[in-house]
Structure formats: structure tokens, C-alpha cells
Image (cartoon, rainbow, N blue to C red):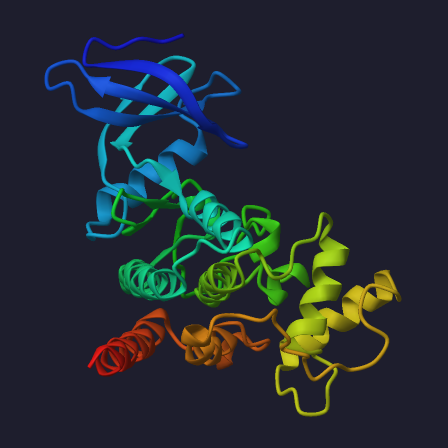
Length: 319
């Protein structure tokens, strides 16, 4: 394993398709950090994943985006050193789900904490989009939490600069459970709308305490997504490009889509009453037509208004 005189590498704390994450520490200060080691599989310079992440990190500076503290290039790998966070959003939700099952979950506290995280994440993603950075891999595993449950957007290995000239993008980076319908339908000229959908799916994960649409194959995920969000073939759907993509999918596989034009069930499991208003915003973020989704900046404003109303209601109940 490659070594540096500036930081140490300890136990493995996570891994993914392109990288392994270790707990580490700076030698001089003793500060605990997370070391993301990205292998150069071809041995021919830094991987595109590492270069994309470094480029994004150098452009972004937001209080709820993870901070990269340095990068070190070696013949066989690249080490990116970040601030250390104790858990992911996925792990946090799983723990809270266990507490709910044992009837020990503080529901009001969970709602308040979740609303704060939703605001932080939508603000962070709005900042990315304002700087023409498309994340492309928003998921509950790529959100990190500190000990006070503040949320930080992480893992920019799939991030690209938004090309407004219609550049084709690779869609395979988007984690399956959080893929937007246009990506599942095979679109390669998408925009920040895929991030908005994915963030809405993350918010739904928080609200429902599990991913709402969780399948193991693309056809299954597409089928369930159409059931939830609606069909491009529905008479009220104005998404012409979606209809074209759906026609192409059905030509390849007539059984790929639901047999009749859904308008969208929009059904979710029973959730705490404090989240009812959030569902309206999340449904807008997860609109079938990308053009109908609000920007993350607008979604953030709506979440702020909901959080303020929730706080006032709580204060009134205390009185």
C-alpha cells in the first residue's frame, strides 16, 4: 500500500466501485480524516474518477459540501483526503428505523432534524448547479452526517461540468434506486433535473425510512418508477421527449413498461404528520417531466417555509 509522510492510513470504513475509504490522520496535527483511495486500474496516470472529483472540489466551497484537505498522486492510485464524518445518511435512517420499530424514536425530533438536513442538502446542491456542476450520483450513501446530524454532500467522482450545448453524458454513474425516469429510459442528454429527482428520492428515503423504489435491475426500476411518477404515454403528459424514449424502450421490450398509461399513483407508506407538507415538495422534485421539477434553490425555499411553520407549530403546542 502506498504511504505518505504527511498522513497515516488506518482501518477501512467504506468502499465503492472506484474507491476504498480509510480512516486516517494527519501526522503533524493528529486530526482524524477520511482517506479516499482511487485506484488507477490501467496504471496509466490518474483515473478520470479522481480527476473529476479533484476538479469539482477545487471549484466548490459550501458549508454543506465535504471539504477536501489535500490530494496525493501515486503510480497506482490517488489519495483524496477529506474531513471525517462518523456516518452516512443511509446508516442514520436505518438506526432511526430500528428505534421506530422498538417504539423509542422521538418522532418530533426526527422530523425537525430531517427538515434541517433537507434544507442543507438542497442548498448545497443548488450551489453546485449555480456553479455549473452536476453531481450525477446523489444517494443516501453519498450524504455524510456529523455528530449533530448536519448533512454534507459527498462523493463527486461522477460530477461533470454542465454543458449547455447538449453534450452526451454517461448515465451509468447514477445509483439505481435514485435514477430519474429519463435516465432509466436511456436519455443521454440530461441536465440538473436528474440531480433534483435523486435528491427528492433521498428526501423520500428520509420520510419513509427506506428507499421508496428499490429494485435490483434497470427494467424493474423503470417499471416501478413509471407506476409512481406516471407514464409518458398518459394523455395529460406533455413530455414529448419522454414519449419518444418510451416508444424506443417498448420497441426493444414490449413488456418493459406498465400495460396502460398510468397518471402516477404517488402512493407512499404512512409517514409522521410533520412530513405531510414535505411530500408535496418531494413529489414536485420527482415529477415525471424534468421541466416540471423545481430547481434545488426553489425546493430549498419551500423546505425553509415548511420548517419555519413546523417550528411555530411546536412553539404554540408548548404554550
